[in-house]
Image (cartoon, rainbow, N blue to C red; front, side, top):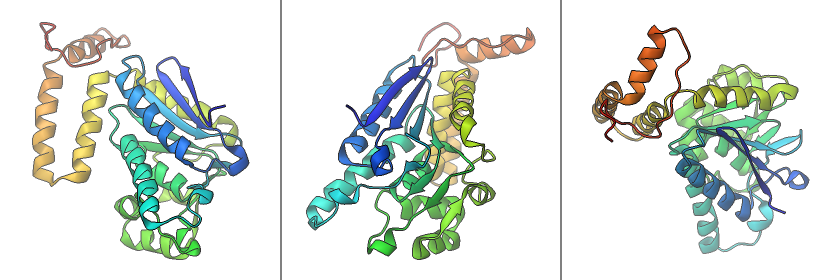
Length: 268
C-alpha cells in the first residue's frame, strides 16, 4: 500500500502522508511521491489546489526517516538530502497553491515542508521545531534558508540552535500562518475551505500571483516589479478578467473555466 495517499475532492487534491506508525516521517518513497504528486497536479487543469496533511492525530510529519540516514556516507547523504530539497522546491515553486494542514508534530523535514508550502493551516495541537542539532545534524531540506526569511535571523537561530518548539499560537504570532489555529476536528475542513476558495479564483491569475511571489523571494525588487507589471497587464487584457469584471457588475459569482490566459479574442 502506498505511504502517500492521493484523493481528489473536486478541484482539490489531498495528499496524506500515511506512515502513522513512524509519525509520518519522510522516507525516500514519500519524498518522491510528494514531488510526483505536485508535478502531476500542476499539469492537471482540473486540479487547482493541493492540501498536504498527515495521517492520524499525533503527527503531521516528524521529519526525515532517521533509519535512512543512520551510518550513511557523505555522498549518499548528499543524494538523499538533495532529493528532499528538490521535492520541497517543487512544492515551493508549484503553479498551483499547496496548503499544509498541520495536525500535530511537525519536526525537521515536516517543518521544512510547511515552510515550502504556500501557507499552512495549524491545529491547536500543532508543534513545530527543527531539532536536528540535538542529533548532531543540521536542517537539510531548506530550513536554514527559509526559516530566517520567514521569522528573522535571531528567531531562526534560536529555534535551530536550541531545538525549541513553537506552539501553534506562537507560530501564528510570528506570521508563519495567516490563520488562527483551529481545533483538530475542523482542521482539514478549514484547509479545504481555503483550497476551495482559491480554486474558485481565476486559475491564470492564481498562477501568475504564485510566480510573482516566487520572483519576490529570489530576485531584487526592481526585477520583481517588472515581472509583476507584465503579468498584471496580461491579466487585465485576458478573458478571465472579462468574466470577473462582468460578474462583479452583474452581482453574481464569477465562473472561471480557462486554464491559461487568453486575450479578449480568445487567443493565447
